[in-house]
Image (tube, rainbow, N blue to C red):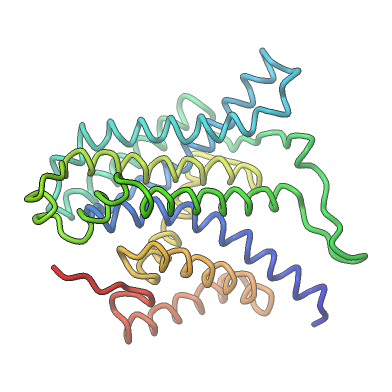
Length: 300
């Protein structure tokens, strides 16, 4: 294997990592803070992708001169719509199911089926694609024989910016301080005056918004269908559990490891064997570290 091939495989792993990280960050925040197993997280990703598709159709129809700007607008729309949907979902359903993990899992699984049917019935039963804006077409020629697609470079940059924004929110703002306090000890946080109900709603909405951004960036890699989210939800849960629930940095590191393993394993073996090998490694690691590879120690 020469250097060019090494660079291409590493870049492919980096592309997989960005999608997994954007998906897993939202799930880790929701799962880590409230213990909610949101089985509809994949459908929220699809909602973000469909929002971007709708934005593309809107610009093509009414603002064709500004078509190059639709993707950035679509990312903002995807975050806002999934954020609002997540907030309403938490207020209308999830808040009544706290401390009932099985009921929460069943309810969100049912919601995922409903959303799939809505996408199938009112948007398109077949997969849809969005046009690539002109400034994301083409490749960046790193060397004479190695080139990287601009769209994937943009997604990597988007993931870095999103990760940095989440870090700043959680570790540099008062809202982040409240979220971390509730994550570490809900009872004491409520006793010192933190409105845990408000924090729950905001945090759940934030997790959903991050899924929307993941869906928007996903449209640059593949087409979107009613069951697109199902293809990623299992991998996303594996990333969160493997990295350690309640550890956001662990989730990011886990997504990077999983993305690189998927890229390299698929180079040396078939797709199904690569997936089986990754799952086997995850099981072995969880056997020795049941709380995850990068689990943080929290006093309860």
